[in-house]
Length: 203
Picture 1: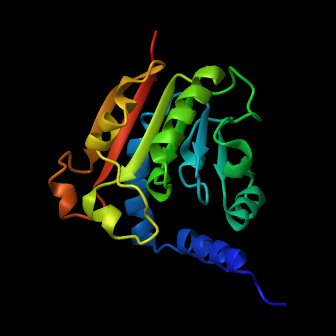
Picture 2: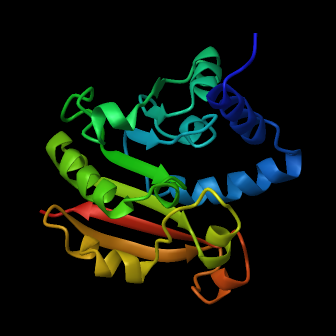
């Protein structure tokens, strides 16, 4: 039986995430710990991959993932991860009960989407409805964005400002920083200098 292109892509992506060397896993943990410190309470980890961050988050946190192979792996390892189909739900998160989660985090996903600003606005609306207090986004810097042919939208503070995302009526930006070196210029030379954006619910 011949595998479909979707199945091949799913398996390749899973292999890429799962078969990291010990050194790469340590480096990955260094980055994830910085994201974790912004995630308070039970968290929705959207695009959770093989669950590296999810394992670090408070008990009761859940993950959403679009890759069927990855979802199967996570479930077999006892993680609360659900298959997400953006075309069906449009980032409304209708399956989530209001008041259940405190933080929503989405890391290295927005750059893969064609209309990222629309997705962020949908997430703001949905998270407000669900009573989520904090939203954490992570996207690659300049060189990181150029390093992957599947990236479709470059997101910087200029992009955030031009698309009116910094003045959202429900959430205010609390943090915008590059990590591990807080320099946009450095991100032009170092592939893994990423931009962290944290929004808190307006009182």
